[in-house]
Image (cartoon, rainbow, N blue to C red; front, side, top):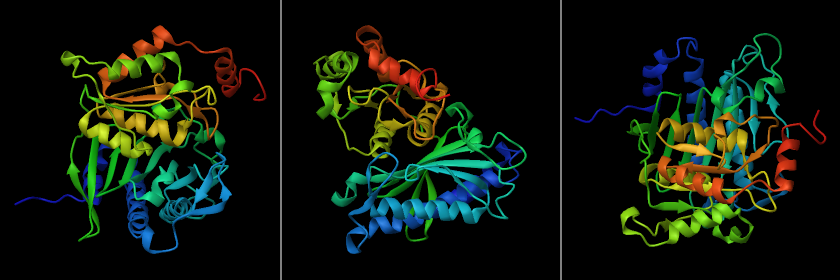
Length: 355
C-alpha cells in the first residue's frame, strides 16, 4: 500500500528541524501552498474567462502587467496577510516593499520575497508558468520591520521554493536541508510528496539560453555556446538547446534531466536582467541544495550583496560540472567592460547616486 504524504503533513514532520520557529515557518509555507492552489485554478481556466491579456499598468521593471500577474500577486499577498506569519512582502509587481500592518502580524518574524507569476509572457500561448518565493527571518527584534530587514544576502534565506503550473502542478521547496517536490492531486486538492530528496545530475546535455541575443552576449558566453554545439562523443556533444522563456520551467526541466540555464549580462543590460531578491537567490538556494551550482559567471549568487529590492544579476545555474565549464570560458574570454564596471559599482553604492 502506497502511503500518501501531503505537503501539510510533510511540513509538520520536518518542523523539528527548526526548533526556534515554533510552527511559524510551517504555517507560512502552508499559506503559500494555499495561494498556489488558488492561482493554479485560475491558470488552468484562464482561456475560459476574461483573465488573459494585458492591463494598462506597468510594474517597477517597466513591463506591462498581465491580468493574471496582478491576480496572482493579489492572491499571494492576501494569503500572507491572513496567515499572520509575515511582516513584509517584496513582489516583482510592487514598486516598494509592502509592510503588513495588522494586529496578527505585529510580531511576525518572516519576510517573503516573491515573483507571483514568472514567465507571464507565455500565459496567452498556454506554456508553463510559475511562482518563485524566498523566505527570510527579519533582522530586528523590536519595532516595525524596515528595508534593513529586507536587504539580506541569499545565504540568509531560511526557505525558498517555486511552483510550476504545467501539465501537472508542482511545488518544490527547500529549508536548507535538501529539496523536495510535491505534485498537486486535483482529486483531493492537496500537494502530495512525489519527488523526495531531489538531486540535480552533476552533468547534463541541455543548455538553456535565449540565443536571439547572441550578438549582445559577452565573449565567454559566445564561446561556451559554440562549445555546446561542437561534436564530441566523449562529452555527448553537441548538447541540446532548450529555452522556454519561463525561468521556473527551464530550471525545473534541468533539475530533473540535468542542464545549465544562462541569463548573462548583455550590452543593453550590463548588470543582467533577472532580479536577485525574488528570482536568482531563491532558485540558487534550491539548486545548491539539490547539488548544483549557481553563479554570475564569476561569483556565487548567494554571496552577492543585496542593495536594492529590484536589483538585477546575471546567472549561470544548473548541473555543477556544466556551470564550472561555463565559468572557465567566462574567466578566459570575458572581462567587465567600463560600462559594466561602472554600473556594478553604482549598484553597490560605491559611485553614483546611492549614499
